[in-house]
Amino acid sequence: MLPESEIPTAWYNIQADMPNKPYPLLNPGTGEPLKAEDMFPIFCEECARQEVNTTDQYIPIPDEVREKLAFYRCTPLVRAYDLEKALDTPAHIYFKNESVSPVGSHKLNSALAQAYYAREEGTTNITTETGAGQWGAALSYAAKAFGLETAVYMVKISYEQKPYRRSIMQTFGATVTASPSMSTRAGKDIITKDPNNQGSLGTAISEALELARTTPHCKYVLGSVLNHVCLHQTVIGQEAEKQMEMAGEYPDIVIGCFGGGSNFSGIAFPFLKHNILDGKKTRFIAAEPASCPKLTKGVYLYDFGDVAGYTPLLGMYTLGHAFQPANIHAGGLRYHGAGSIISRLLKDGYIEAVDIDQLKSFAAASLFAKTEGIIPAPESSHAIAAAIDEALKCKESGEAKTILFNLSGHGLIDMSAYDKYLAGDLTGGGVSDEEIARTLKESGLDPSKAL
Ligand SMILES: *Cc1c(COP(=O)(O)O)cnc(C)c1O
Image (cartoon, rainbow, N blue to C red):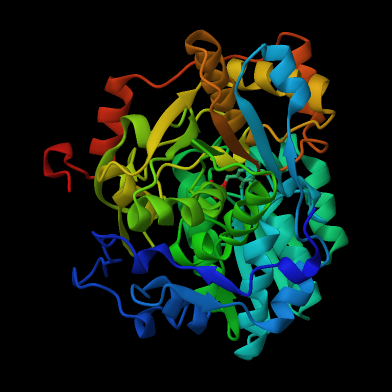
């Protein structure tokens, strides 16, 4: 355990250290790179400035944000002795436990920062999308902590599959709408085309953006993908670095599950800094679902962040914004693209990616629950599965590597998914190359123009 006084005082901005900078956001109308000011109408101004900051290596964390982080930070770093034993591996497996936050996931790290800046800038209302509900829950709580009203568009399939996440948001005082909904033009368009549309993060983002645009004193906040969100998550890796040092270890492999990239960035970037600047050779593995494989099968292109095409264009690994992910239970990983920083780092060989089948992720989750006593979020289970794979490779080679993964959240509100797994009702499966080619085309993207 680290005391509160060890909570980082600044976020680590990897953009400053990257030899090749991420591609800038583009205005889809003009094709010009966006300046911070261009984003002020939609985003909090300070977040917009952080988004495009490629020069400051560290950005101070405001005192009031640190005070709220202290409700649950520093989070524990745990050595998974019993998991090691069950795998009979010489590897040392550590996990950073972000599930201890009041809302059960890492998402609060950025929600608190964004709600703080919104209040500082005189905003009264914030709106967002949520997939499985973790981001919505984190934001609803963070908004109340800073005296703001919140409207959350929740992906319809999750709204139905995960009613308790909705109740959590409502308990914190948020208004929650299933997306696609009839309350926005974007939602109406989607429902008109496809009345049974179950929603995706892409559709929910379109609706929240539209509300922010059409409501005074309302800003849009995002829980992943964007550079400033990844920045806010770097408290995870900075703490982990100190904690590993106390344990007398340094990771050979760092693993995070991957939706839009925020928890992976959070655990990875502070260590990746030493690969870039000090010649360390740590491997960084992003674990994504086989049913939404943007890093392992996507193409590096400029694409929209949402289904309706309201966002700026992002230079990212993408399956195409028209990609409709299968209804897997790791709702937080059902996103068609990867953040610009991660995409650049993957392209340049600083990080790797693996895809994990849903059934394999639940098998890993079960073993982890039995050995470590924590029921992981279905999202986090992808990181666990990747960590187990690496630990088993160590068993074969006899190498005692040090593996660190991020436990991004607990699964106590996802028990219906575990029920299905136990009953044998869950399916696995990936996405065919033909399907990806089709959705890229539907999204107006040409793979031969890859960045
Ligand atoms: C949202 C979420 C994720 C995926 O989002 P990233 O931005 O990729 O981290 C992973 N795990 C949990 C528990 C989540 O809530």
